[in-house]
Image (cartoon, rainbow, N blue to C red; front, side, top):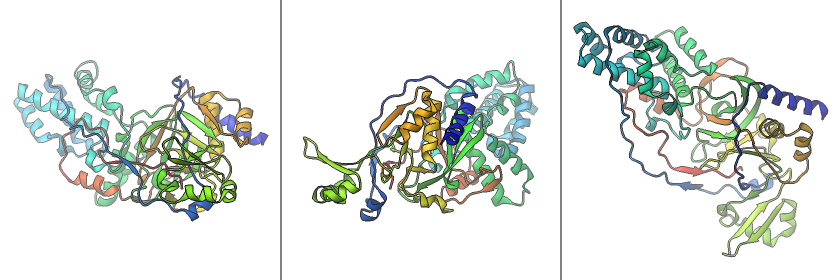
Length: 453
Protein backbone atom coordinates (compact mmCIF):
# COMPACT_ATOMS: atom_id res chain seq x y z
CA UNK A 1 0.00 0.00 0.00
CA UNK A 2 2.87 2.37 0.81
CA UNK A 3 4.41 1.75 -2.61
CA UNK A 4 1.09 2.46 -4.28
CA UNK A 5 0.57 5.61 -2.22
CA UNK A 6 4.07 6.74 -3.13
CA UNK A 7 3.37 6.14 -6.80
CA UNK A 8 0.12 8.09 -6.67
CA UNK A 9 1.72 10.95 -4.75
CA UNK A 10 4.54 11.01 -7.31
CA UNK A 11 2.01 11.32 -10.14
CA UNK A 12 0.44 14.33 -8.46
CA UNK A 13 3.86 15.86 -7.83
CA UNK A 14 4.73 15.60 -11.52
CA UNK A 15 1.43 17.27 -12.43
CA UNK A 16 1.90 20.06 -9.91
CA UNK A 17 5.37 20.72 -11.29
CA UNK A 18 3.73 21.80 -14.55
CA UNK A 19 2.82 25.12 -12.95
CA UNK A 20 -0.08 26.68 -11.09
CA UNK A 21 -3.60 25.69 -12.03
CA UNK A 22 -6.48 28.13 -11.93
CA UNK A 23 -7.67 28.57 -8.36
CA UNK A 24 -11.41 28.27 -8.25
CA UNK A 25 -13.85 27.20 -5.59
CA UNK A 26 -15.84 24.38 -7.14
CA UNK A 27 -19.61 24.25 -6.59
CA UNK A 28 -21.01 21.34 -4.62
CA UNK A 29 -22.92 18.96 -6.85
CA UNK A 30 -25.54 16.51 -5.64
CA UNK A 31 -24.59 12.82 -6.05
CA UNK A 32 -25.65 10.98 -9.16
CA UNK A 33 -27.32 7.50 -9.43
CA UNK A 34 -26.48 3.75 -10.12
CA UNK A 35 -27.09 -0.02 -9.85
CA UNK A 36 -25.11 -3.27 -9.45
CA UNK A 37 -24.01 -6.09 -11.72
CA UNK A 38 -26.88 -8.29 -10.49
CA UNK A 39 -29.28 -5.44 -11.17
CA UNK A 40 -27.75 -5.13 -14.65
CA UNK A 41 -28.96 -8.64 -15.43
CA UNK A 42 -32.27 -8.43 -13.56
CA UNK A 43 -33.27 -5.02 -14.92
CA UNK A 44 -31.98 -4.23 -18.42
CA UNK A 45 -31.56 -0.62 -19.46
CA UNK A 46 -34.70 1.30 -20.37
CA UNK A 47 -35.71 1.56 -24.01
CA UNK A 48 -35.07 5.30 -24.11
CA UNK A 49 -33.01 7.83 -22.19
CA UNK A 50 -34.18 11.23 -21.02
CA UNK A 51 -33.67 13.94 -23.58
CA UNK A 52 -33.47 17.67 -23.43
CA UNK A 53 -34.35 19.93 -26.32
CA UNK A 54 -31.67 22.37 -27.41
CA UNK A 55 -32.88 25.99 -27.54
CA UNK A 56 -33.20 27.01 -31.18
CA UNK A 57 -30.94 30.02 -31.73
CA UNK A 58 -30.73 30.97 -35.36
CA UNK A 59 -27.03 31.08 -36.28
CA UNK A 60 -25.81 34.17 -38.11
CA UNK A 61 -22.82 34.47 -40.49
CA UNK A 62 -19.55 35.41 -38.83
CA UNK A 63 -18.53 39.03 -39.24
CA UNK A 64 -15.33 39.24 -41.29
CA UNK A 65 -13.18 42.37 -41.02
CA UNK A 66 -11.95 44.27 -44.06
CA UNK A 67 -8.61 46.11 -44.02
CA UNK A 68 -6.23 47.63 -46.53
CA UNK A 69 -3.79 45.08 -47.98
CA UNK A 70 -0.50 46.24 -49.54
CA UNK A 71 0.86 44.15 -52.43
CA UNK A 72 3.63 42.52 -50.36
CA UNK A 73 1.26 41.21 -47.70
CA UNK A 74 -1.26 40.11 -50.32
CA UNK A 75 1.46 38.14 -52.11
CA UNK A 76 2.52 36.55 -48.80
CA UNK A 77 -1.12 35.56 -48.23
CA UNK A 78 -1.30 33.99 -51.70
CA UNK A 79 1.90 32.05 -51.04
CA UNK A 80 0.46 30.73 -47.79
CA UNK A 81 -2.76 29.65 -49.50
CA UNK A 82 -0.81 27.78 -52.17
CA UNK A 83 0.89 25.60 -49.52
CA UNK A 84 -1.99 25.27 -47.04
CA UNK A 85 -2.53 21.69 -48.23
CA UNK A 86 0.29 20.76 -45.82
CA UNK A 87 -2.14 21.67 -43.01
CA UNK A 88 -4.75 19.31 -44.40
CA UNK A 89 -6.82 22.14 -45.92
CA UNK A 90 -7.79 22.81 -49.54
CA UNK A 91 -6.09 25.78 -51.27
CA UNK A 92 -9.02 26.31 -53.66
CA UNK A 93 -11.30 27.17 -50.72
CA UNK A 94 -9.55 30.51 -50.32
CA UNK A 95 -9.94 31.77 -53.91
CA UNK A 96 -6.23 31.92 -54.91
CA UNK A 97 -6.99 32.52 -58.59
CA UNK A 98 -9.00 35.66 -57.84
CA UNK A 99 -6.34 36.90 -55.44
CA UNK A 100 -3.57 36.26 -57.99
CA UNK A 101 -5.44 38.22 -60.66
CA UNK A 102 -6.00 41.21 -58.37
CA UNK A 103 -2.37 41.21 -57.21
CA UNK A 104 -1.29 41.41 -60.86
CA UNK A 105 -3.52 44.48 -61.33
CA UNK A 106 -1.91 46.33 -58.40
CA UNK A 107 -3.18 47.70 -55.11
CA UNK A 108 -6.90 48.44 -55.09
CA UNK A 109 -9.99 48.36 -52.88
CA UNK A 110 -10.95 45.14 -54.66
CA UNK A 111 -7.63 43.51 -53.70
CA UNK A 112 -8.08 44.55 -50.07
CA UNK A 113 -11.61 43.14 -50.04
CA UNK A 114 -10.52 39.81 -51.56
CA UNK A 115 -7.44 39.47 -49.35
CA UNK A 116 -9.43 40.29 -46.22
CA UNK A 117 -11.96 37.61 -47.08
CA UNK A 118 -9.36 34.95 -47.91
CA UNK A 119 -7.43 35.71 -44.71
CA UNK A 120 -10.60 35.56 -42.60
CA UNK A 121 -11.58 32.21 -44.10
CA UNK A 122 -8.09 30.84 -43.44
CA UNK A 123 -8.22 32.00 -39.83
CA UNK A 124 -11.64 30.46 -39.32
CA UNK A 125 -10.57 27.08 -40.69
CA UNK A 126 -7.11 26.96 -39.10
CA UNK A 127 -8.48 28.10 -35.73
CA UNK A 128 -11.92 26.46 -35.59
CA UNK A 129 -11.76 23.66 -38.18
CA UNK A 130 -13.10 23.45 -41.71
CA UNK A 131 -15.78 20.86 -40.86
CA UNK A 132 -19.21 22.52 -40.58
CA UNK A 133 -21.23 21.98 -37.42
CA UNK A 134 -23.85 19.84 -39.16
CA UNK A 135 -21.11 17.29 -39.95
CA UNK A 136 -19.88 17.03 -36.32
CA UNK A 137 -22.07 14.32 -34.82
CA UNK A 138 -22.74 14.76 -31.07
CA UNK A 139 -20.23 17.60 -30.86
CA UNK A 140 -20.74 19.63 -27.68
CA UNK A 141 -17.19 20.83 -26.89
CA UNK A 142 -17.24 24.60 -27.37
CA UNK A 143 -13.86 25.78 -28.68
CA UNK A 144 -12.77 28.99 -26.89
CA UNK A 145 -10.25 30.01 -29.56
CA UNK A 146 -12.73 32.14 -31.52
CA UNK A 147 -12.98 34.42 -28.49
CA UNK A 148 -9.29 34.35 -27.57
CA UNK A 149 -7.84 34.68 -31.08
CA UNK A 150 -10.13 37.13 -32.81
CA UNK A 151 -9.92 37.42 -36.59
CA UNK A 152 -9.68 41.21 -36.53
CA UNK A 153 -6.79 41.14 -34.05
CA UNK A 154 -4.96 38.53 -36.10
CA UNK A 155 -5.41 40.48 -39.34
CA UNK A 156 -4.03 43.65 -37.74
CA UNK A 157 -1.03 41.67 -36.51
CA UNK A 158 -0.43 40.16 -39.95
CA UNK A 159 -0.51 43.62 -41.55
CA UNK A 160 1.46 45.29 -38.79
CA UNK A 161 4.18 44.14 -36.45
CA UNK A 162 4.19 40.50 -37.57
CA UNK A 163 3.76 38.80 -40.94
CA UNK A 164 1.03 36.75 -42.59
CA UNK A 165 2.67 33.32 -42.36
CA UNK A 166 3.74 33.76 -38.73
CA UNK A 167 0.23 34.77 -37.65
CA UNK A 168 -1.48 31.93 -39.51
CA UNK A 169 1.05 29.34 -38.36
CA UNK A 170 0.43 30.41 -34.76
CA UNK A 171 -3.09 28.96 -34.97
CA UNK A 172 -1.94 25.34 -35.26
CA UNK A 173 -2.98 23.03 -32.38
CA UNK A 174 -0.15 22.51 -29.91
CA UNK A 175 -0.96 18.86 -29.14
CA UNK A 176 1.76 16.48 -30.45
CA UNK A 177 -0.82 14.40 -32.34
CA UNK A 178 -1.45 17.27 -34.75
CA UNK A 179 2.22 17.46 -35.68
CA UNK A 180 2.36 13.67 -36.05
CA UNK A 181 -0.66 13.69 -38.37
CA UNK A 182 0.82 16.56 -40.39
CA UNK A 183 4.06 14.62 -40.84
CA UNK A 184 2.07 11.52 -41.83
CA UNK A 185 0.15 13.53 -44.44
CA UNK A 186 3.41 14.80 -45.94
CA UNK A 187 4.76 11.23 -46.15
CA UNK A 188 1.60 9.70 -47.65
CA UNK A 189 1.49 9.49 -51.49
CA UNK A 190 -1.20 11.57 -53.16
CA UNK A 191 -2.46 8.40 -54.79
CA UNK A 192 -3.48 7.07 -51.33
CA UNK A 193 -6.61 9.19 -51.34
CA UNK A 194 -8.57 7.37 -48.64
CA UNK A 195 -5.69 7.43 -46.16
CA UNK A 196 -4.97 11.09 -46.87
CA UNK A 197 -8.65 11.95 -46.41
CA UNK A 198 -8.69 10.21 -43.00
CA UNK A 199 -5.54 12.05 -41.93
CA UNK A 200 -7.04 15.41 -42.96
CA UNK A 201 -10.28 14.67 -41.10
CA UNK A 202 -8.42 13.91 -37.88
CA UNK A 203 -6.13 16.93 -38.23
CA UNK A 204 -9.30 18.99 -38.45
CA UNK A 205 -10.71 17.38 -35.30
CA UNK A 206 -7.78 18.83 -33.35
CA UNK A 207 -8.77 22.28 -34.60
CA UNK A 208 -12.26 21.80 -33.14
CA UNK A 209 -10.68 21.78 -29.67
CA UNK A 210 -8.84 24.50 -27.77
CA UNK A 211 -5.49 25.19 -29.41
CA UNK A 212 -3.83 25.07 -25.98
CA UNK A 213 -5.51 22.39 -23.89
CA UNK A 214 -3.87 23.38 -20.62
CA UNK A 215 -0.92 22.23 -18.54
CA UNK A 216 -2.71 19.37 -16.78
CA UNK A 217 -5.78 17.65 -18.19
CA UNK A 218 -7.60 14.38 -18.69
CA UNK A 219 -8.32 13.30 -22.25
CA UNK A 220 -10.04 10.18 -23.50
CA UNK A 221 -10.25 9.06 -27.11
CA UNK A 222 -13.49 7.10 -27.31
CA UNK A 223 -12.58 4.76 -30.23
CA UNK A 224 -9.27 3.92 -28.57
CA UNK A 225 -10.93 3.04 -25.22
CA UNK A 226 -8.18 4.84 -23.30
CA UNK A 227 -8.01 7.74 -20.84
CA UNK A 228 -4.82 9.75 -20.35
CA UNK A 229 -3.66 11.93 -17.47
CA UNK A 230 -1.55 14.45 -19.33
CA UNK A 231 0.97 17.07 -18.19
CA UNK A 232 2.25 19.60 -20.73
CA UNK A 233 0.94 17.32 -23.50
CA UNK A 234 2.94 14.37 -22.17
CA UNK A 235 1.21 11.24 -20.88
CA UNK A 236 2.02 10.40 -17.26
CA UNK A 237 -0.65 7.70 -16.76
CA UNK A 238 -3.16 5.81 -18.91
CA UNK A 239 -6.37 3.97 -18.00
CA UNK A 240 -8.51 1.61 -20.06
CA UNK A 241 -12.10 2.74 -20.52
CA UNK A 242 -15.52 1.32 -21.33
CA UNK A 243 -17.58 3.76 -23.39
CA UNK A 244 -21.15 4.07 -24.67
CA UNK A 245 -22.77 1.54 -26.95
CA UNK A 246 -23.38 2.72 -30.52
CA UNK A 247 -26.77 4.38 -31.02
CA UNK A 248 -28.57 6.66 -28.61
CA UNK A 249 -26.20 5.77 -25.80
CA UNK A 250 -23.03 6.69 -27.74
CA UNK A 251 -20.71 8.88 -25.70
CA UNK A 252 -20.83 12.51 -26.91
CA UNK A 253 -17.79 14.74 -27.48
CA UNK A 254 -17.33 17.16 -24.60
CA UNK A 255 -14.89 19.61 -23.01
CA UNK A 256 -15.76 19.96 -19.34
CA UNK A 257 -14.14 20.74 -15.98
CA UNK A 258 -13.46 18.49 -12.99
CA UNK A 259 -15.24 20.00 -9.97
CA UNK A 260 -15.07 17.14 -7.46
CA UNK A 261 -14.05 13.56 -6.82
CA UNK A 262 -16.63 11.35 -5.08
CA UNK A 263 -15.35 8.32 -3.17
CA UNK A 264 -17.83 5.55 -2.34
CA UNK A 265 -20.62 7.18 -4.37
CA UNK A 266 -24.35 6.57 -4.16
CA UNK A 267 -26.71 6.42 -7.11
CA UNK A 268 -30.28 7.67 -7.26
CA UNK A 269 -31.87 5.36 -9.81
CA UNK A 270 -33.77 7.12 -12.65
CA UNK A 271 -37.55 6.84 -12.58
CA UNK A 272 -37.43 5.02 -15.91
CA UNK A 273 -35.80 2.13 -14.04
CA UNK A 274 -37.12 2.42 -10.48
CA UNK A 275 -40.73 2.76 -11.64
CA UNK A 276 -40.71 1.83 -15.32
CA UNK A 277 -38.69 -1.34 -14.77
CA UNK A 278 -40.27 -2.22 -11.41
CA UNK A 279 -37.20 -1.82 -9.24
CA UNK A 280 -38.95 0.26 -6.57
CA UNK A 281 -41.64 -2.38 -6.18
CA UNK A 282 -39.02 -5.12 -5.88
CA UNK A 283 -37.07 -3.17 -3.26
CA UNK A 284 -40.21 -2.73 -1.14
CA UNK A 285 -41.45 -6.29 -1.55
CA UNK A 286 -38.12 -8.03 -1.07
CA UNK A 287 -36.12 -6.23 1.67
CA UNK A 288 -33.59 -9.05 1.94
CA UNK A 289 -32.67 -8.79 -1.73
CA UNK A 290 -32.64 -4.99 -1.49
CA UNK A 291 -30.25 -5.02 1.49
CA UNK A 292 -27.95 -7.54 -0.18
CA UNK A 293 -27.71 -5.30 -3.24
CA UNK A 294 -27.46 -2.03 -1.33
CA UNK A 295 -30.81 -0.54 -2.35
CA UNK A 296 -32.98 1.69 -0.20
CA UNK A 297 -36.26 3.36 -1.14
CA UNK A 298 -37.99 6.52 0.06
CA UNK A 299 -41.19 8.21 -0.99
CA UNK A 300 -41.34 12.00 -1.34
CA UNK A 301 -44.19 14.27 -0.36
CA UNK A 302 -45.42 14.18 -3.94
CA UNK A 303 -45.71 10.39 -3.80
CA UNK A 304 -42.66 9.73 -5.97
CA UNK A 305 -40.58 6.76 -4.83
CA UNK A 306 -36.82 7.12 -5.18
CA UNK A 307 -34.45 4.15 -5.08
CA UNK A 308 -30.87 4.80 -4.03
CA UNK A 309 -28.03 2.33 -4.21
CA UNK A 310 -25.72 2.84 -1.24
CA UNK A 311 -21.90 2.87 -1.35
CA UNK A 312 -20.14 -0.44 -1.69
CA UNK A 313 -18.17 -2.63 -4.09
CA UNK A 314 -21.40 -3.76 -5.79
CA UNK A 315 -22.49 -0.21 -6.60
CA UNK A 316 -22.52 0.22 -10.38
CA UNK A 317 -20.42 3.38 -9.98
CA UNK A 318 -17.90 1.27 -8.10
CA UNK A 319 -15.83 3.13 -5.53
CA UNK A 320 -15.13 6.43 -7.32
CA UNK A 321 -16.78 8.98 -9.55
CA UNK A 322 -15.35 12.17 -11.06
CA UNK A 323 -17.84 15.04 -11.24
CA UNK A 324 -17.67 17.11 -14.42
CA UNK A 325 -21.05 18.87 -14.60
CA UNK A 326 -22.63 18.86 -18.06
CA UNK A 327 -26.17 18.66 -19.51
CA UNK A 328 -25.57 15.07 -20.66
CA UNK A 329 -24.91 13.79 -17.11
CA UNK A 330 -21.69 12.17 -18.36
CA UNK A 331 -18.95 11.40 -15.85
CA UNK A 332 -15.95 9.14 -15.29
CA UNK A 333 -16.46 6.35 -12.79
CA UNK A 334 -15.36 3.01 -11.41
CA UNK A 335 -17.32 -0.20 -12.04
CA UNK A 336 -17.76 -3.58 -10.32
CA UNK A 337 -17.66 -5.23 -13.77
CA UNK A 338 -13.88 -5.20 -14.17
CA UNK A 339 -13.91 -8.08 -16.65
CA UNK A 340 -14.91 -5.79 -19.50
CA UNK A 341 -11.54 -4.03 -19.34
CA UNK A 342 -10.02 -7.24 -20.73
CA UNK A 343 -12.00 -6.91 -23.98
CA UNK A 344 -10.42 -5.31 -27.04
CA UNK A 345 -13.61 -3.49 -28.04
CA UNK A 346 -15.15 -1.86 -24.97
CA UNK A 347 -18.36 -0.10 -26.05
CA UNK A 348 -20.85 -1.42 -23.48
CA UNK A 349 -22.00 1.49 -21.32
CA UNK A 350 -24.98 3.83 -21.53
CA UNK A 351 -22.76 6.81 -22.28
CA UNK A 352 -20.72 7.37 -19.12
CA UNK A 353 -17.07 6.32 -19.10
CA UNK A 354 -16.08 3.43 -16.86
CA UNK A 355 -12.44 3.81 -15.91
CA UNK A 356 -9.83 1.21 -15.05
CA UNK A 357 -8.00 1.70 -11.73
CA UNK A 358 -10.49 4.43 -10.96
CA UNK A 359 -9.65 4.69 -7.26
CA UNK A 360 -6.02 5.39 -8.14
CA UNK A 361 -7.18 8.10 -10.54
CA UNK A 362 -9.52 9.58 -7.94
CA UNK A 363 -6.78 9.70 -5.31
CA UNK A 364 -4.47 11.43 -7.79
CA UNK A 365 -7.18 13.99 -8.54
CA UNK A 366 -7.78 14.59 -4.81
CA UNK A 367 -4.07 15.14 -4.18
CA UNK A 368 -3.67 17.31 -7.26
CA UNK A 369 -6.94 19.23 -7.22
CA UNK A 370 -7.67 19.55 -3.50
CA UNK A 371 -4.15 19.36 -2.02
CA UNK A 372 -5.23 16.32 -0.02
CA UNK A 373 -2.47 14.28 1.64
CA UNK A 374 -2.05 10.85 0.07
CA UNK A 375 -2.73 9.01 3.35
CA UNK A 376 -6.00 10.87 3.81
CA UNK A 377 -7.10 10.14 0.22
CA UNK A 378 -6.30 6.44 0.75
CA UNK A 379 -8.25 6.31 4.03
CA UNK A 380 -11.31 7.94 2.44
CA UNK A 381 -11.22 5.59 -0.54
CA UNK A 382 -11.52 2.48 1.66
CA UNK A 383 -13.89 3.95 4.27
CA UNK A 384 -17.07 2.66 2.55
CA UNK A 385 -18.56 6.09 3.38
CA UNK A 386 -19.80 8.56 0.78
CA UNK A 387 -17.23 11.38 0.63
CA UNK A 388 -17.17 14.23 -1.84
CA UNK A 389 -13.89 16.08 -2.32
CA UNK A 390 -14.47 19.43 -4.07
CA UNK A 391 -11.62 20.67 -6.24
CA UNK A 392 -9.94 23.90 -5.18
CA UNK A 393 -7.97 23.78 -8.42
CA UNK A 394 -9.88 22.88 -11.53
CA UNK A 395 -8.64 21.34 -14.74
CA UNK A 396 -10.25 20.21 -17.99
CA UNK A 397 -11.55 16.87 -19.20
CA UNK A 398 -11.75 16.27 -22.94
CA UNK A 399 -13.91 13.48 -24.36
CA UNK A 400 -12.75 13.19 -27.97
CA UNK A 401 -13.31 11.03 -31.02
CA UNK A 402 -10.24 10.44 -33.20
CA UNK A 403 -10.04 7.61 -35.70
CA UNK A 404 -6.35 8.23 -36.33
CA UNK A 405 -3.81 9.34 -33.78
CA UNK A 406 -0.94 8.29 -31.58
CA UNK A 407 -1.84 5.41 -29.30
CA UNK A 408 -0.66 5.21 -25.68
CA UNK A 409 2.65 3.76 -26.91
CA UNK A 410 3.24 6.71 -29.24
CA UNK A 411 2.51 4.81 -32.45
CA UNK A 412 0.39 6.64 -35.02
CA UNK A 413 -2.41 4.35 -36.15
CA UNK A 414 -6.07 4.16 -37.13
CA UNK A 415 -8.87 3.25 -34.71
CA UNK A 416 -12.22 1.71 -35.61
CA UNK A 417 -14.95 4.25 -36.32
CA UNK A 418 -17.27 2.63 -33.76
CA UNK A 419 -20.01 5.27 -34.05
CA UNK A 420 -19.75 5.97 -37.79
CA UNK A 421 -18.78 9.61 -37.23
CA UNK A 422 -16.13 9.75 -39.97
CA UNK A 423 -18.54 9.70 -42.91
CA UNK A 424 -20.03 13.21 -42.54
CA UNK A 425 -16.60 14.73 -41.83
CA UNK A 426 -15.07 13.08 -44.89
CA UNK A 427 -18.05 14.12 -47.02
CA UNK A 428 -17.68 17.74 -45.91
CA UNK A 429 -14.12 17.79 -47.27
CA UNK A 430 -15.40 16.58 -50.62
CA UNK A 431 -17.99 19.37 -50.73
CA UNK A 432 -17.40 23.13 -51.18
CA UNK A 433 -16.42 25.01 -48.05
CA UNK A 434 -19.41 26.29 -46.06
CA UNK A 435 -19.47 29.81 -44.69
CA UNK A 436 -18.97 29.87 -40.93
CA UNK A 437 -21.74 30.96 -38.60
CA UNK A 438 -22.10 31.78 -34.91
CA UNK A 439 -23.03 28.15 -34.13
CA UNK A 440 -20.48 26.63 -31.73
CA UNK A 441 -21.80 23.09 -31.10
CA UNK A 442 -24.21 20.49 -32.43
CA UNK A 443 -27.91 21.33 -32.39
CA UNK A 444 -28.79 17.64 -31.87
CA UNK A 445 -30.89 16.70 -28.87
CA UNK A 446 -29.11 16.36 -25.56
CA UNK A 447 -29.54 12.82 -24.24
CA UNK A 448 -29.08 12.56 -20.48
CA UNK A 449 -26.94 9.47 -20.13
CA UNK A 450 -26.91 9.16 -16.34
CA UNK A 451 -27.18 5.37 -16.41
CA UNK A 452 -23.81 3.71 -15.73
CA UNK A 453 -25.05 0.19 -16.45
